[in-house]
Amino acid sequence: MFTFIKEKIVDVEQLLMDNKKASVIYLNPSTYNYFRKNMELIKNVDGVRFDGLFMSSFLKLFGIKVPKRQSFDMTSLAPKVFDKAEEEGLKVFICGGTDDDVDKFCKIIKNRYPHLQIIGQRNGYFSDAEFESVKDEITLNRPDVVILGLGGQKQEVIASKLTPYVDGYIFTCGAFISQTTKKIDFYPKYINKFNLRWAYRFVVEPRTIKRVLISYPLFIVYLLLDFTKYKNKGIK
Image 1 (tube, rainbow, N blue to C red):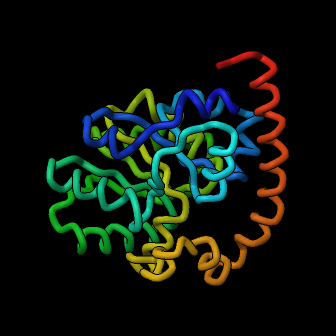
Image 2: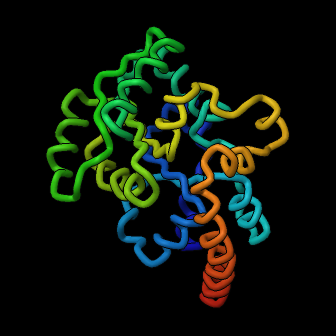
Image 3: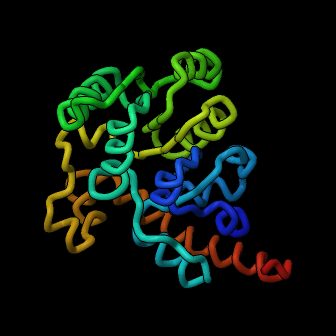
């Protein structure tokens, strides 16, 4: 997994400036812990970034150069993607949340970006057996940008599966769709200024606390193990 990350880490803003189409997933400690034993499920993705300062900071300690924060939310990357799509007439497909969530999300985003071409939307509740029909639904109008908010593990797997069929950008976005239905600027300015997004989520989404308490210590252990294996193989 350590080798995978070193090879796949990307600067998404540079990809956008260079018009280099790519599928990009965002890993957090929980998904890192899962995919380190299931790497075949994300083998097709073109790039990887990280969700949160905790993971990025630890990776830097182990010699991985992480470009500046580029999370897919309105405090970072999402406005750059929507600006580019609006200015260049790129077609966007949104997938995630419930039918109500994705409908509200698209209306809110269209209000902020009135010239954005959202050519399709659908909920994120589908089974593995339904993937082919979902893939056909997403690719029907040849989207230039696909945004997936399907929850950890599922969204990364679907991004990998879609990569051979989408000639454009694919981004996983975590809870971005559901968060935006509450407020387009989910994080208050002072929270974003002082990098307290994690604490804010603890307050407004207390279910994340349990995940952090379990996943984050395991991530540190697994990262140490993976780094040791990487060094023992003599990979530069």
